[in-house]
Length: 341
Image (cartoon, rainbow, N blue to C red; front, side, top):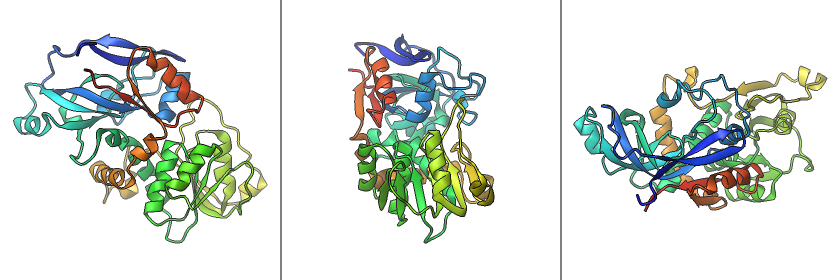
């Protein structure tokens, strides 16, 4: 396009910029495709950790995403994994039938924020024709929410709490509400608490002030802060379980785990979306969970959540301001408009 293509670069902790890239004339690998980007979503929890430098520089970026499994969190780096764009070119070795299926179609790819992307043809997901690109960028977030709910394994009639109503927490709340579960949500920020009610939470409480019988059967913790995890542990009754979805980075988390906790027989379960848990693998695979995620995206109308955030045209001067705004908590969700004129 007229302005040329750009990508976002995390230069060092707290410093983000954009740099020019030239991919239109690059020779594609046999198994690669070229994608003209439409939009991408900032995955707030993880990307703010990268922005702050709160990541283990030796750890692998993602062992389950082909293009990321050999990368570590080393600056300067590109990062991000929620991008939708249109396929404009196929490499010579891409099977003709696959190329025909992909050409001109919108696809989802786990790629960093960039106005043009080269990806492996087998690694992208076709966006269903009835799903808007600005809904489709929520696919990993919705899949994460489903993974948390599957790991919670609660029964009909059980009391379920969701601690933290950021993007993932709101999606967990919305999916549970759609499934007929009475959700108690815990959130300190008023605008997020209001959204939680809109998306179906039966009760929304401020964990600092509101009285609550500590008798949840299960709490799903997606607050990303130590006090949120403490809330989840405390509000679950004896014998209940806490599913921990937050990534706490390299920082230490301080918890009060006194005699009451010691006797409580509560179970703490970590949950992460990359793999299907072994106990579900007989019936579920990634494709089945993606199909369910697309269905949930249609039902929830995820853009309602985006409406409370921001769509930013990716211009070189925007990137730093955008991440600073997310860190201050003034924005819940930010998507980049990546289309070039």
